Length: 292
Image (cartoon, helix red, strand yellow):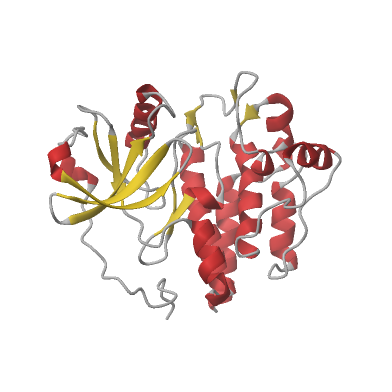
């Protein structure tokens, strides 16, 4: 029998509310219902706290860092999360938008950021667990692909690990809905170069296939246990080298077949890269083979 708990979790798993408890489309929470506890982390746009909701539920509360982004941008992230409901996406419980700062209240993921987790605990993980991580993320991305959403910032740093070590995709601040699977930004738009496909850094064209490329980079992060891609190169050097056909080296833990999948994700032509649903089938078969 295989269990998803890969090593003992020292903290007791808290009760988890369901989104349905908020009522039919009612996402506004009262700030008085939320008690802020410890700070979990901070980034360019905001700070995240562990908190208690209604005195019983552990939640994560994201707040805007003053002056870092507009309230409209922050609200847009909440509206995106409201439209998306999947077991491998971090769940939104509600927002506190009637007073400043605005709170975005989501499920709490006790084991934190996947990148940090890989660096701290990666050597404890077996091949099957690494495959499970890739499967979880691919499952989420297949769902987003089917809903015509593109994430635009897929990386290990933007995935979180729950108490059962299920991995979920988070950070929806750059997610966009696209009718024709193509989103073209204005010049000057910021994007993570080392996770970006050639059509992104040359033409700022985003599609589900450009995030298949990013998924290939994320696979590399997983199988190197959290190493930094293109560590020896700055962004301009990465653009030059990738444009010339350079690709990341094969991680030591990667088999021939997994390495081939990585390379397929990094095909120069977007239409030659696999779709997420095809990658999901691959990982489903591969993890079953490794369970046998």
